Amino acid sequence: MCGFIGIFGNTDVAADIYVSLLNLQHRGQDASGMVTFSNRFNLKKGDGLVRDVFKEKNFSYLKGNIGIGHVRYPTIGRGETNDAQPFLSNVPYGIVLAHNGNVINFYSLKEELERERLRVLNSMSDSELILNVLADEISSQLPFSVDNLFRAMEEVFVKLKGSYSAVAFIKDKGMIAFRDPNGIKPIIYGIKGDNFAVASEGVALQAIGFEIVRDVLPGEVVFFDMDRKIHYKRLREEKHYPCIFEYVYFARPDSILDGKSVYEARLNLGKELSKRVRERLLDIDLIVPVPDTSRPAAVALAEELGIKYREGLMKNRYIGRTFIMPCQKEREESVRLKLSPVKEELFGKKVMLVDDSIVRGNTSKEIIQLVRDAGASEVHLAISSPPLRYPCYYGIDMQTRGDFIASDKKEEEIRKIIGADSLTYQSVDGLVKSVSCGLDMNFCTACFTANYPISIDSSDLKRIEYDRVNK
Ligand code: SF4
Image (cartoon, rainbow, N blue to C red):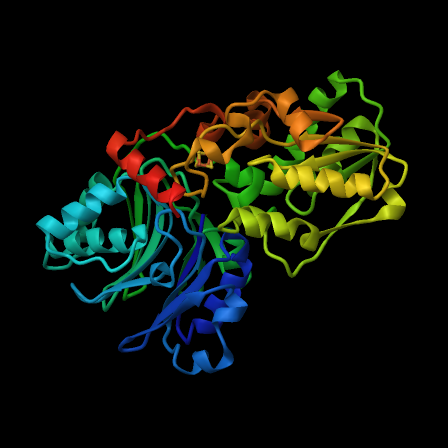
């Protein structure tokens, strides 16, 4: 999971890119980067949060009315500085690109590109690979024209497998946005006067005053040329499988993804979860969210069950999201740094905590103990998504089955390990019903169901798993 923003404006865009990246920070905290164009590409990227990477002095050279920004959360690659985005290719024309997703044939395609097209890739980032495939295909379709660009993109879609939503700027030609044929990861574009912008989530556009036009469709290319004319072409018409976990956890609740409100989806998750909790005939005094993602689900759950809702855990806002920290040690150490119990609310109460998911179980165990230590007489746990059991190969850092406590354990075993008095998961049907908001829709649910919308070659799969285990 990553976040990007691309802006084609009239005046310097660096400040707007900075604001947008702050609004996308939840999508990646590992590295941040920005490139602008003013007769040359001006690039600044580094490890860390947006506020740490960009200093006031950087804005004196980040000049230009066109630019791309990125926040990274590593999937392919080891998360080294070299892998930070955006990436730049000098040939042809000069192209910069940033993306979100995961190219699942990364290793085989990288080798092919280096062997047969004599391109040299300097990082282990699939964004650099996408950039080089795009550059190579544009070079094969010269002279440049919009039709030839669409022809080049047809080949890009054939070569790249996996999930990729991307924005690129081609010097003196225009800004291009595209989304993989199954539309797994979000991408949305907007306008402000004759300015154009594209981002991973609408919140990044709204924060800088852009009016949202619509999501880029699966298999579609949107091109904004130097005369500020927008060209669209849907090159592939395949089934749309947006990532359902975006609605559960990743996206900001004030975002609308593919026409559906993330906040509404999370409220629905709480309503659906109430059906399962009710079946258990539990005696609960308080519903308490594990902040922040699960708050709407907890509110709806409390309303449905007629149980008091309280903020029993306070979050230190200056500690990063634990799930997306790259190593387990950091995650474990950060729970007590991140959360603090409100003892006055919890003492002597039968508490039901609501969280969005359980990955490895260590965080849940620590939070439950934290609430017990604060004096709760019982600690129950309700999860707004079903058990996470299967690896994600499309852009989330959980690519081996060993990442999940539920991959080989039943719910009762998990309950005992994490030390809860009861454990209630959402059903897969409840999840899909909640997120589709009454519409007939497909989703990628592979990490819950093993129904993978895009198959992965076994040698690529082995390389991905080896890379993750030896990270
Ligand atoms: S496997 Fe899960 S996290 Fe990955 S894209 Fe599919 S729904 Fe999203």
